[in-house]
Length: 126
Length: 109
Image (tube, rainbow over all chains, first blue to last red; front, side):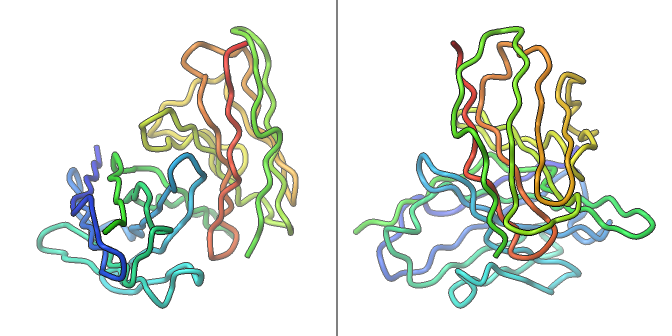
């Protein structure tokens, strides 16, 4: 059973960089062709997809955040990470890491978030 | 970006009721539509992928079903149970950036 766990500071000052790590257990992060992703949820609000990493280094980020987001992977540690620069109060949210599960059929590939971390609240405040 | 709109935003229902939640995409997404259930303080849980396929990992009860294609989709709960009171989200994986609906909160009547 795959498990994910987020870790990192719960409080970040405005204009600084938010850094989170997701540790994956129960499976290798480099096998299976899975994507690994970050999602956030503003307090009391809906879900926002941040971006993903795959193939040990290829990334894609939501254009709304793209210039501030870096996603990286540490394969020996079975971890992947998120860095979000120049944070403001609007970046206060619960941040989730998740695996992108895949079902491939003849002419289609379906992606979905099948395993999630428990989430970690990051507050941006001075 | 593809906009996902759910209706209603909230509903009140009783145990045993049949509940239907609708999700509409701003453009055709074929059947690249997923549904999640989220309980307070917990991460979302995958219920349905590809519009109508039940998640195997999550052991989704058979009372949950999904349907639809193109722009209009539904999640149906046939016989609401106490543990089903939660917020439900749809999400499209047709094109990046992947986007979610705003959520539908199912409350106890």
